[in-house]
Image (cartoon, rainbow, N blue to C red; front, side, top):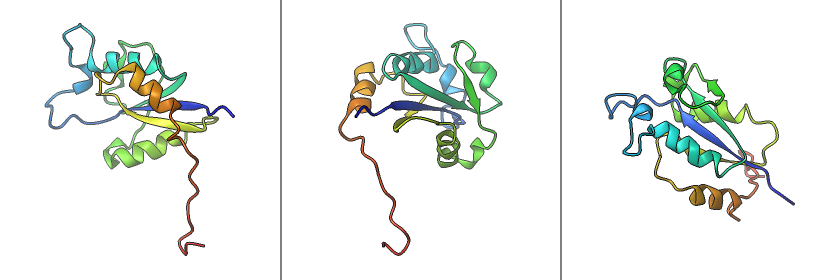
Length: 129
């Protein structure tokens, strides 16, 4: 059985410690943090969804990709992930990727997606029955 794995790319952060929008910071090769991160994810995983906030979506337009807008990003990463999962129709599993990680290699994403670590989890009820 082939497992269909996609990637959720979280680009909805606030870059508070960085001081400006980290995703638009330019790297030594001329790419932005977001551009290089997304390029590596695209080369590794057949499907992906980028999640961002409405206030910064226009700043991420240097990459031709669909941006999924989450209007409640201030609620935190957990809420953003929950929103993202709601966008997935036919994946069996997904990688949760941060859009500000430009130095993760394509092979790392690829190996994670193909890893035997991908398992189906069954939640226990509150009474553990």
